[in-house]
Length: 435
Image (cartoon, rainbow, N blue to C red; front, side, top):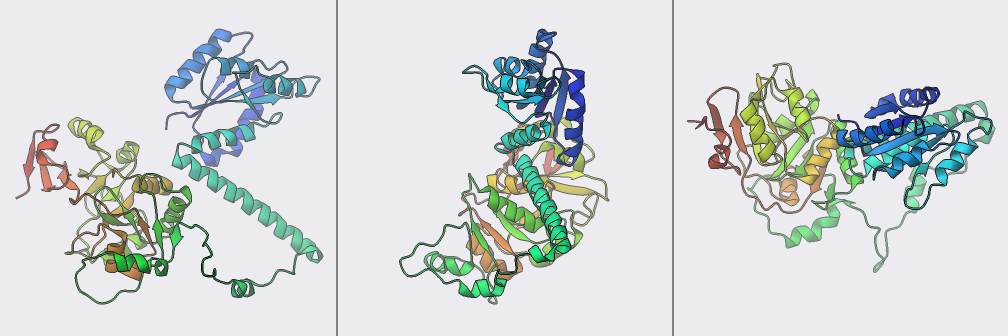
């Protein structure tokens, strides 16, 4: 991954506290670069590094300096990127001089300041800034917060075990608390929640005409989550990702039809997906990804003409079948090839990014039936067989994705779909249709 955090230090003596902070946060896998340069002794080097860092993709800069601590202000004056200053204790004033220097920047050249020697907080603040833009960084931040809370709770339990007389024992049991809860009275507003029980949407069901094949009545899905398809709530995406990582099957909207999704690396979840779908075991299920870097880890080779095509048509309704090592994701694609797609759907891409691995996804319908294009159709098909349905509204597109095999030449159009053969031939000429 390209660097996102640039760290510049004014003296080699500042390095130990930076190194220790990076070591403490190595599990966060922060994409950092480091530069040693002085605002006073090598100002040209500082200016060049700031420009080079911006060009390399850095989006937050941490400037570590002691004593007069001019470095953070000099860096901030030469960039529009957010700058975080870390004052260092290296003089007789124990870092207070550096702290005052950093926080007293002139108007128009702001520098955020953390505590003396506190590179750790600077890194976490940088992660907060990146999390506003990148779901993966937000996931790392949430994981970190949960880890810190778990450590504190473990320490509390150790304390109470040693001193039980200080434990709080007056809280009523969970069952008693639940019994005391009362439903809202008529006219009283319910709290706004995006996750709703399926009982709450019965009125919606009555007002929406759904055409599904006749069959036995299926129990309702456990949970339906209504999302803004263009701006889904982070908490909802995290809930969906947690379920997938727990081995559950959920339904998600894509840019074509609704799909049943699972963790492609979890053999038990994949088996359940095949059974739920009623799909033949020798018929592989494609995977959905959120970035080209994931594709390069899955397949043996990406031909240049295919690479050019994908740069133009992904994200989009095009599934491409590539050769792969037979052991790679063998549960979902047991043979020497695998179908891969990057959907043009904010909800789907957000879930994939949060899970941080390819999702096994097949259209949300029993084999041989029409694909579902609404969350309620998904529920009619599968009901209690799935744990969560992400409701992104009715999907307008009617076509499934086009499937193109590039396993051998000439390439083969395995299934026509939303992307036409004419469009594909603008990038690749040696395509034949499967007979």
